[in-house]
Length: 454
Image (cartoon, rainbow, N blue to C red; front, side, top):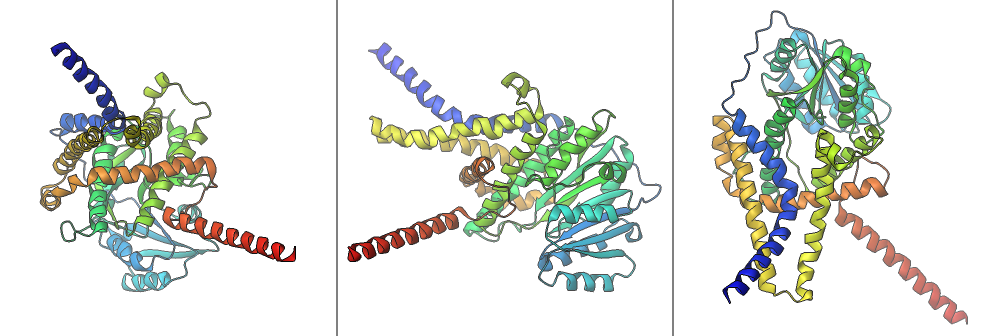
């Protein structure tokens, strides 16, 4: 009798253990690498950067498209830098704005006559074209792109220049991007989404990018805040429109150009930039779909031959694809098949217990993620993070939601033309139903007309 129960327990553990481990494989591997890297480097002292003997000229390119609400804060954050303003050139490139963006720029240039600020207008919209125009017009030794809805920390430019001046091998770098959200004040649905986004960005940049920097494996120079040596960026293809992720495309292009010269692409942790939190679910869907689609498109451009499993494990792009795509597809299995087990005769309580167990596993994973984000932050920011400790209960659901948005990007790259603008799937469904209903009514009316004639 004991042997029978033992065999049943082993069978139960293996069966449901596999069901629980399949989706966790997607996230645990990455989280484990970040956690080990964090533990190994938490007591490691940052190399002290030498003070500057002189201040190189820095060009900041800001693409502007209907950015009247945020452009002012972006410009004033540049004017308030600790870096001497007379050594900063600001080029705003208007690409199809129809709001009061120019009025915001004009007011700023009037209030800061000591700064070199320029406004250039293009005939059509296009972020890549705007960035390229600004890069060609800039005179700085270092070229920096900053989105119009992004604002810089007080010492961001100074820390950027110090890093580049102290590291001749550094060809390009991305700063640390954070979500500018006051923590703990709101508890609405979008507030909770934003809190999850805050944690996600901290881990992605301050932990993930640090790890990629150590391995010389930066995947994307953030479009919101990136820096280049002038000679390097002008020798590249600049930003292109062949994918929806022009920043990732440029990253791969630069890496390929400097791989024989010993140059590298890096991450500057103390160069901080802040972005607005996502304002709606439609915007979150569009953003994540575009990120995932761009990742697939860029990989397809630079990898003519798909490496095998063994080769992919030793290639940083291959590892990302295995994590983001190959293993991600496995989630479809338990998402659709696990509830179907009920119709195959499995007791409902057993299935519910399995789902609860899966949530608990993800909850433990998110607790570890929150701990990494908390320990990797400054003491002042740690106090703010304490206000939203409870968000770990919602993080598994947020990850699951984002997974479906990113999966839509994988499907979209195979079925749709590339586009920066992507509609909310609910709106798409409504439009499809509306069009099908309209067609059905027209067919019914035509059928009724023919019946009367007959």
